[in-house]
Image (cartoon, rainbow, N blue to C red; front, side):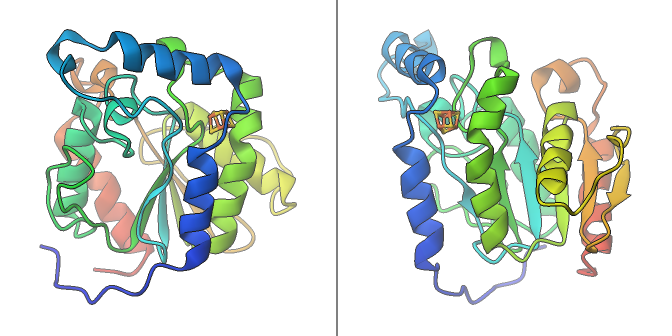
Length: 236
Ligand code: SF4
């Protein structure tokens, strides 16, 4: 269970980066789509005001574990304005994070729900919700500088990539920063890869309904990833 933790002050650079991401409009197709979804809405959320734009990073600004997802859900994070918040993927994720001691509660419903993370932060390879949940390669590359700026300010020891595209995104970043120059290591649930600079990439199936409803990803498989992350971080 999570211990009571005295929180350090949030460094200005963390807030500055998040403000810049919030204001980004570099991908017109995605910005238009986020706004359109926010305007049309899903029936269940018809009385809510959607966020409807880029979703910035969330979590501990001193994180050693960085969770890397694909993109905000159209009616999840694009509605609530926080990573993995307001949809089934988030239900799975925060329950597992709570169990592994990274979150103070297992529910994540809206921006003011009191959720806090300790030791981990969450980002996406693409900060805007894409149509069919599929950003183009160009859009992922356009968003990469936000990832680079985030990684530059965190003392990351372990990257946890949800799905193949996030896995590839971390590898591309390591290649661009000359940490790694080999082939793309094979992605798989529980696979890990050690970079020469000591950082580790860990892979997990994405907790999307496509995986959780079909049984491709079970709760125990998902929990085992966070146990492994804790071991890699020497937490417990
Ligand atoms: S996907 Fe990234 S780069 Fe493109 S508009 Fe959204 S925040 Fe900006």
